[in-house]
Length: 428
Image 1 (cartoon, rainbow, N blue to C red):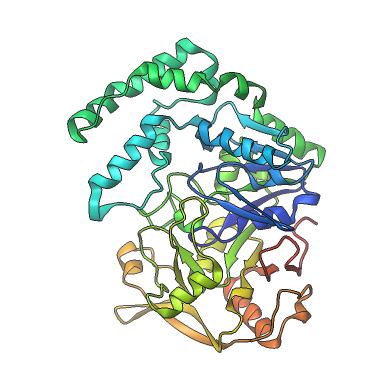
Image 2 (spheres, rainbow, N blue to C red):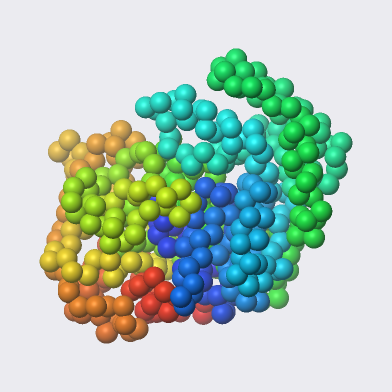
């Protein structure tokens, strides 16, 4: 006790890295259980700003054991680039462990990702082009390369040959690209083996032992609920399980080990890539939210789409994940607004929906029904208790809490590590 899962409530970029970091001094282990380097966490410690893509954000906390679980797809080049960058800044990365069962992203995955998106044209998904989807597709098709395969060259070569048999036909005959040789892939992957070897372990066993000892283990999701391959806005989703259920399967522990589910939600809403977004603002206010909130992708630098808080989405995420606590981030971004709209329901062709419609077509055509709340002008970045907030800010938080069907335990009032209000302890 306890196993704490941290998941995004919206479409990602909610501030999960900061939430993990807030738990840092009380955390023994941080496990990344899904996704790859297609998402980023930005963590601010003092005057230092760190942008992480593949590594768990807990690696920045001294003494914390960081784990890349079996549910992650690993780009080894990115892994070592990030490790080198952190080590150059004096961060101890020696406690990182990588699951032997995690799948590896290869050069052909990245190539297929990019050419497929171009081929789709207007029907493109809006992927990051990092090879995430093709790597997961190979995993499901049972032609993937796992970390453990790098330590047996014969097995590795056989698996790469099997994967390229089909992919080269696709690259040459459909996409008019050159074929990829087995040797170039094998040589590239083998170049990482000696440095990788000390990091590789049966991480599920390590995590289970840690939980048995009573260590605090944080399971950190990449992406977010509305990008989950099963429960998100399909097909405009990621290729992995980004909900709390993925914490068990993606790290190799039983679901009974998960004691608390913490959902991270912004005080407004953002999204990157294509797909429905009922509260999206295509006007000056949307641009104001983007600039004031610094809404640009940590991994891609892409402008995030912006909109008002969507209560039905939060209720949906609370149900799907079994969320016990919410961390509300970026409340400070709303400072200065005279009035703050909140989406409380949707209108779909004259019919009111209080919950996210099960039909994707309905959700695509959903129009937000808003309630409006009075804003505030006071600087809230120094607030450390709920009572320090202006009354209108308190009223806004309490209204969101009531709409969300679960408690708001932490409120972010600025980007720095200590700029937060803790209403309820996330560990005890």
